[in-house]
Length: 99
Image (cartoon, rainbow, N blue to C red; front, side, top):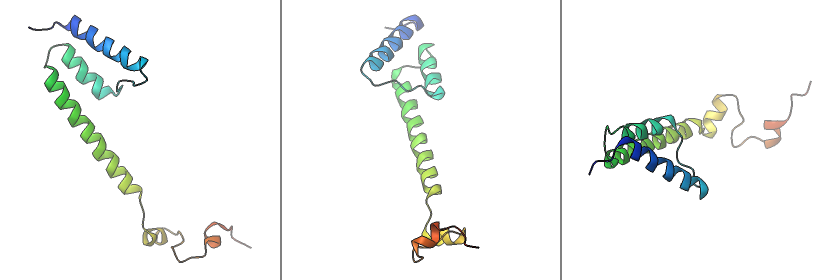
């Protein structure tokens, strides 16, 4: 039994409203909404939407890990960029230059 686009839109709106009322908002990322719109238009069925959403969340997690890793520095890197290393007196790291 095929579901028409009006019925799919009604289903999605009802699911989103129910989730919001329960304090669990539905993802509002434009990529996700585009996937939902393709499902609503009948481009693919729910298993395909689920698979594409899983791919989207995996890409997000990968980007998040990449950013987190890029922001982490080791004591040696801190010294390279002019920061104080682990062995430095902590007061020297935050004390203003005395003239």
